[in-house]
Length: 293
Image (cartoon, rainbow, N blue to C red; front, side, top):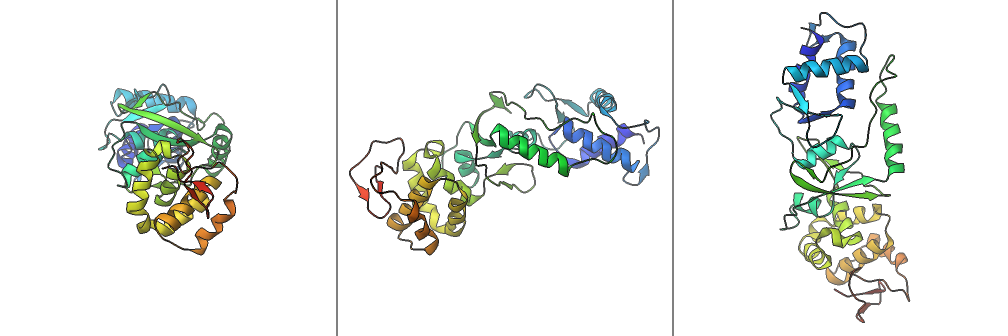
């Protein structure tokens, strides 16, 4: 067994639908360092594992039809031909951008909170500055032993209009969530509490405020602890005020954790339950917000 044989077997075992240059290089470096695969020593090992040898390995695996360039991306992304999974748009996007995650109406659909089936996939990703900081942290944590100065780095893939024939809408955020990973795949998604919180921070991205209120009325009591934690984690005063109003005055919930959000209410302001609707004279005295929906 040679190094290319081991790489092909490792890709089959991983069952990932796609792999980036960054992950491919790390996989090759690990196999090269161990000099064996599944207990079988490797023969005809090259003098080193570096960028050129990675490209040579990729060319040979392409010739074997083990990998192929992924048409949804320009460079640096490979489709694993023998994977049992083609990969959903959500999973492929999560592999391409290691810090993005499914959010808003798409997250609501995944959790069964909405009967709507959005055509577009909603993703959130950190702003460039935060993304670069997270990249640097990941590179430090993933540091390879030995000399790998020409190893591919983590890159921020630019998504085309569609991934796996599904339209993609990417939202940049300066306050990214800490997403959870779906079982059995690489897809990252906002947890249930943050999903509810995002509905109040950006209702237009979640089907509009009337749909959001319907979802909260029907489902929020089932997830109240997670929602309170999600709202607390969100750096949005208006989301806390909207959540406080809904919990108190629509759902009849009193909780000291919710009462703390009253500190964010502002008398004499022009805050509205629906940020896109006209101001209404109906008002919550406790939460100091116009009930315009």
